[in-house]
Length: 220
Image (tube, rainbow, N blue to C red; front, side, top):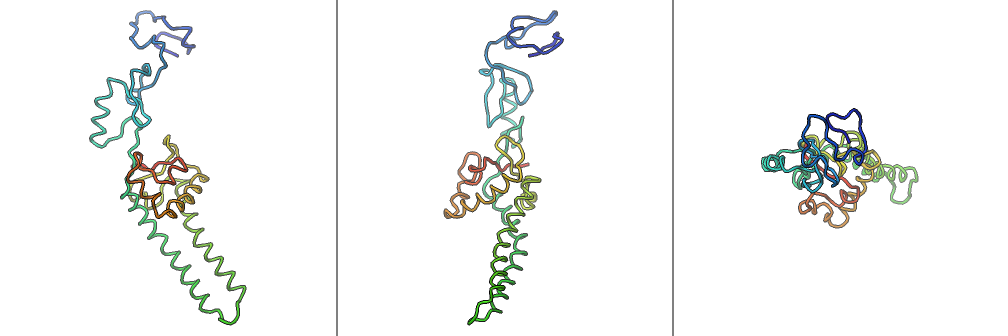
């Protein structure tokens, strides 16, 4: 620990009970309880003198202002404002419109190849091209989401809606986690979209893929 009047940091046990010359110790300065930093004012208090709210710790002095700002829709001391169901649906629609163009081109190419095939004979080259195009239709949205979420935490749709994907502690996602989150979405879709619908009822607005990958979608 360190306090005014000390030259260097020192183990708490070696200085407990000592008061710097000319200073008046505060009641919490020499408590034997574990100490916690208030997310709002940055001062240190015994753990029993602070409250926890969504990962933030607030002292008694800051509590009225903290909750008043929450009522007004503000963020205080690192608390997250989770993005709700409908704004996430809006972001998904925008991304879907963007991805519609390449997917439509792939669909047209597949249709042309299928039409060109002779019904009596199977052309292995054409069959291979059709298979590659089907794989490409999955690869494009995977690359799209992995790149944007891994690099910026936002796809273009999320940028427009002012939301972002982060870890539970607020950190950014790696490309690997963004890649895994994309494929985890398919689990949400496969169970009749229940994994997506639960966003509307979860306390932290998490879908099944958010639970799997330890992610949150927040407003910025």
